[in-house]
Length: 262
Image (cartoon, rainbow, N blue to C red; front, side):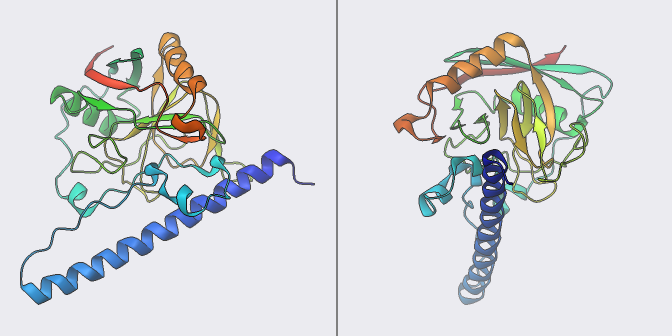
C-alpha cells in the first residue's frame, strides 16, 4: 500500500519531469525561432532569458499539483552560457566561509574546496565582484521540500552570472532510494540547475528542513546553527499570500556577501 508521503513524492517527481519536458520543448522552440529570425534579417538574434523552474510559473499552469513538486532548479538562457567560468584561484585544499549580511540576520556557510572546487571558486569570484550585493532570496518552498532560494541578480528566478559550472560532490548524500531521491539534510546549501548536468550558475538554495530531492544538485556548503535558525524563521513565517511556494513573507535582502578562508 502506498503511503501518503510516498504518493506525495511520486507526484513531486511526476511534476518535476513535466517541468523538464516543458522547458526542453520551450528551449527547442526558442532555438527554431531564433534561426528563422536570423535568416530573415541577417543579424545575430540574442535569445532572451528562459524562465527558470525556480519562478514557479508551472504552478500557475497546473494548480492541482502538490507544492511538494517544487524544484530548486534553474534554466540559464544561451546568454548565461556565453562566458567561461572564472579561472581557478582558490586553494583547493582549504575550506572557505561565505557570509551573507541580510535583512533577516547574518547567514553563513562553510564550503569545502577539496570536494567542490569549481563551485567554491565561482562563489568566491562572484562575491569578490559584489555580484550578490543588493540581491534577494526570491523563493521559499514550504511543502514537499523546504528550501530558501537565493543568488539571482534579477530577483525573479531568471538570472545568472553569464556562465555555468560543472556538477560536483553528487554522491556525498548517498545512493538514491527506490523513489529516486536522497535526503538533503537541514543546513545543507546546494546549487540550483536546469535539471540537466553541469548547468549551475549563481542560484543556490538553503535547506532549512530535511528535504527529499534527486541527487542532481551539487551540495557544496553547510550552514552553522545560527544561520540555520535564521532560515528556519523565514520558513516559519511562510510565503507571501499564504501559498506553499513563492516569495518569502519575511523578505531576505542581501546587502553584502563575502568569501574568506575558514
